[in-house]
Amino acid sequence: MDPNSDLFEYLRHKASWVRKETLKIHKIAPETRLASSLSPVEIFVALYYGKIIKYDPKNQKWENRDRFIISKGHGAISFYPILADLGYFDKEELGRVGQEGSFLGCIPDCIIPGFETTNGALGHGLGVACGISLALKRKERSEKVFVLLGDGELFEGSIWEAVMFAGEHRLDNLIVIIDHNKVCMLDYCRNVIDLGPLDEKFKVFKWKVETVDGHDVYPLYNALVALREDQEDKPKVLIAHTIKGKGVPSLETDALSHVKNLKAEEIDAILAELK
Amino acid sequence: MKAEIKTMRDVFIEGIYNRMYEDSTLFFISADFGSPKLDRLREKFKDRFINVGIAEQNLINISTGLALEGFTVYAYAIAPFLTMRAYEQIRINLSLHGQLKEININLIGVGAGLSYDVSGPTHHCLEDITIMRSLPNMTLFSPSDLKLTEKFVDYSIRIKKPKYLRLDGKPLPQIYDSIKDSEFQNGFKELVKGEKICLVSTGYMSHKALRVANLLNERQIRVGVIDLFMLKPLNEELFSETINPYDYVVTLEEAFINKGGLDSLVTNILTRRNSKFRIKRMGFEDTYIFDMGSREHLHKLNNLDEESIIKVIEEYR
Image 1 (cartoon, each protein chain N blue to C red):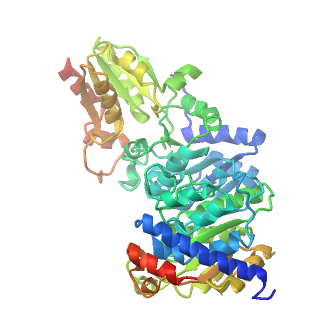
Image 2 (tube, rainbow over the protein chains, first blue to last red; image 1 turned 90 degrees about the vertical axis):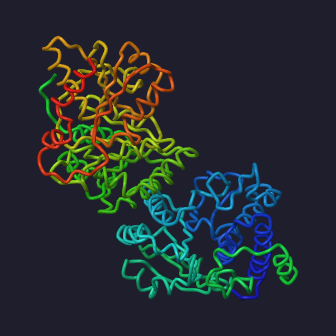
Image 3 (tube, one colour; image 1 turned 180 degrees about the horizontal axis):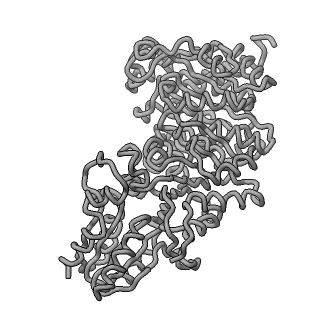
């Protein structure tokens, strides 16, 4: 497919829109984790607008839906505009994040339509997803289980219990995307415990590994499609190289971006600059 | 009392094994923990038995995924590791999800209290009642004998909620000939009707309470015994009514006292109902047990043997 085809222009346009909406949410809900939510924007966009994931906003319990577990829960504020846009809930709700009576928290829970599980606490999502993958295989169903992991989250021991499990049990319906934005809360991951070589780690645990630029929708989309169609009897992981705070220059270069809140006027200035 | 002596875990696993034939939605997961009766189950139901390895966090997370897809899951491990190593997994994935979704996960913890007496304090389980009670949407079952445990097989399938089943590690004598559904639902049973003083106990300590009641009976002292086996949910109103004729309550548990266990449960209920009781809490003080020896030896060192309990009762009289 041509990188400039309509699909990719559409995905780029949606990613830009999602980024703006995420900034607007952060403006009314400063407790949201902005930088962490900006790095997986293209991943969400490719999965949902690229229709890599099977979903039905009108029937959230649709048996044929793919399951999507967002393990890095706090970094999923950018998923709110997508869910609203697709009809999971009213777009007006986006203006009430973190406010009294809203179901949209600064960290998402599974009371929100479109969220399968609650993942504010890190390190749970992959193990739960492994259980879902196993259940689908036992039921001989063809749906896939997608998981979004943060890289800082990879410090949790429970992640590696699940990594070993998935490889051993050949959970080939499991597709993990690592939002490899290189920054945890207090520092760059490499200054805490170097995660590298990440691809080798997964390989030795019997996973299929691919690596991609997580902000370029063209290779990202193609990599996701390829993993979805992959027939090898292994769990699959896509290491998506991303930038924490992508789109906001002051966040992109800040080791403490995770806990940085932008002032309203800063957000207005960025919104004006973004196309 | 009947002569039959089996471990509660074998009785329970046998019950699940039989149900797995007819119910293809039952799934059994172990954190590398066994039992003689489990060998047959894992051989027969290879596709619905999984050993996740010594990985309690993953045990809970895998169970959650299976339960979200409609399976009824039994997650099996040594009690202190199951509840304490994986507490946050239980909190988020069972307790919290259990409020919003139907998930039927049955945590089967073996080794309540001092079951693993000579294995020392890492294997003693003296905190689980306190911490598991504090979780919303969690059922807490602490049976004293085989009949109650057997009854829980059906309950575990029928009631589609997260549950914690704390089982003794040792074979214990049978207490109940049978138990009616209604009695089971109440969560407790007055095994002995007494006067003035009532012993309220759970699990292994209910056997000791019965022994104490028998010993005192020989001396014409009639103490009541209540076996509290379903700590949550419990028919609190009926419990209060049952205990109302007594003046003194002695709680007996193989757990730390004064920090949220059976003693707190009973005290809270009675206080809320403005009862006039005097309560003596018996269990373990705020310290781990490094002494070596049998369960009864450890009880003696910690004033939880029959003689010490009788001494307390005599002071009350």
